[in-house]
Length: 329
Image 1 (tube, rainbow, N blue to C red):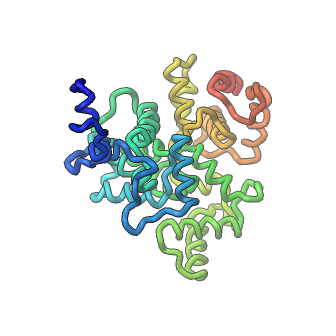
Image 2: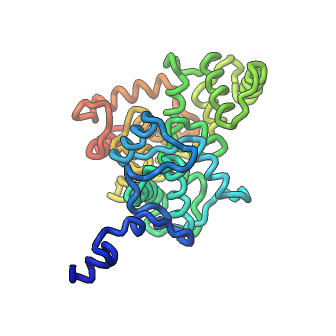
Image 3: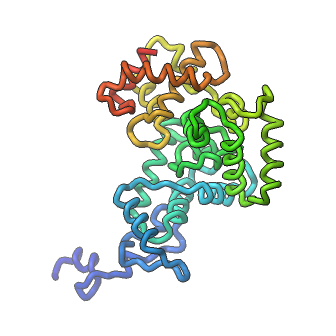
């Protein structure tokens, strides 16, 4: 009781000061804006009473420390923070932006540690792409590549996306694994994009949108989209591996950059689409081509590479297996 530090921590009467742990400083503009002691006792905002299912989902995300931002939230926050359409965010505002973003998505059951976990995950990706010292401005493309989003990659239309995200989008719509997007699959793509931008319209509207899409991107006019044709719609990034394939050897830093770039969901391993994206970029370099490798060819190469490199047979490439993959292709 005579310990002044104890009094400072608990309050004058020796009881814990509950208001000190949950007070929000309205003048703060950084990570410290957010609740330090928020927990299950926190109350949702008026009119926002979460269902049991939603509450359980939030608790599970908090426990896993794996936060994922919905396309709508990500799109809205980027637009709100770039009102002049400059396509960048000031680096000094990054902490506040990331904190606001995850709080908008998970509303009320987050504490400082949760915010810091999300922020650290994003910053690790940004540093992996840009290096230790960040520029004064972070582009939207860099943010979109770094922020862990739910599996709706249509949010990135209009921005350059990593090849691994592009192949995940392809997998999502190529439901019959034919290597093409055909009528029903294209209708689903157009419908999802219309929902994303809030303009669902009538069935006729969607059909007209599909006709417009096909007139622009179906180059060979066969009534379906190939991987290469879809890439023009999605604005896929330049070949990331072009820088590295020409080198005689890779440094540890190069190795880490390659792994971080293709591990777009930050799981610590490369899944099928991420491995195929890496292979696609390597093969494009060796063929001196900017065109995507046809899906059937890519699948065959993937099978052979996995036989040689997936040493623990778990259908993923761990970091320790990546060196073997890079030397086998």
